[in-house]
Length: 403
Image 1 (cartoon, helix red, strand yellow):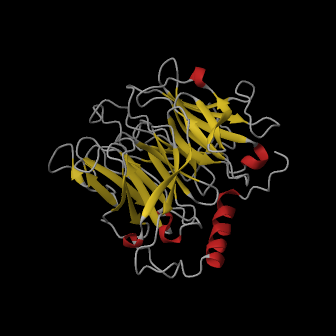
Image 2: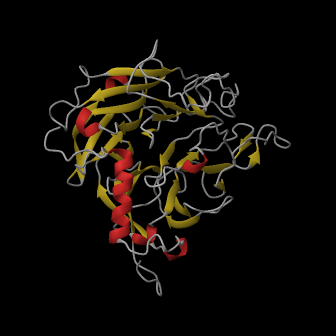
Image 3: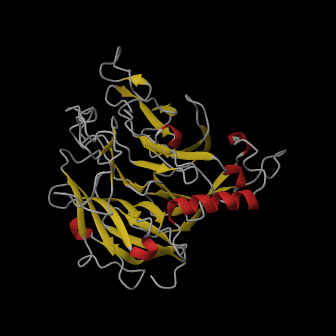
């Protein structure tokens, strides 16, 4: 990847962003986030994508945005339109409903090693697959045949609740969000079964191999040396469709899609272990409420969500990011999330004390499937109409001074 700036990695980006915020946006850290100050809007920055489900960046200093299409292709966003495929694995992918190419993560040292990782449902059997690929000498092209390395495959008993999001944490390990396997109500109680990969957050080291595995197990994973699968980081998830790390604090935010009544957003601070060994409650609980049984359920040792909302407001939460960009200072420090069914977008102070309540900032007619983040921390919204939109401040309300 000649000609690219030296890659800073997650920690380096965090330090740089903090310094930039301190210099260019004086007073941001001294002033608490206030959702009531925000008047937001969405501005279309790209269109023409086929079933887009994710937008992300490579963290390599290039400023490129990559859009994941559910059918099995990754395209760059170029000049407001869909560029030629950067990666095309559509023949490997089973797509439709909740299946498809669902996740993309660039290695923290992508600028020097050219490695990227995808999460998709396999064409022949619908299993969840994590594969590694590398770019060629052309940084805008991946050789899908010569560079593919299979990392992990997990059987799926049903076609829904595949999770799909993957991301590298501030520790440099790859995290994999797994749904409970599907159907409804977790009929085999997989989310609470520590001998199942399903309904979990997994954590692996892709920078090496071990006996029988194309990766290593981090020694600090909570089930190493005790009953349970060594790859598990946290349990008790239903369908963590979209989740993220706060690029400054390292806090882990997990939006977990609910069953029939409640949607939830979980925050696990880096200071408390970043979700290590947490039990997020499903299917004993749905949000802060008993699910199985409907009353008197087991709540001991369960981590309750920071935010929840009922199905009066939507039906499927789409997790987002904490905003640390430079363009829109009033958004700084807010975590933004949405609902797929209603198109509502909310925010909550990333430092809020639980239980907290989100503040609605937009009511759209979009089916929002994902949020994305640029290298500089600007936020984007992905919808099923094939468009990518930037989330921005529209105007400042009367009496609200600039930060």
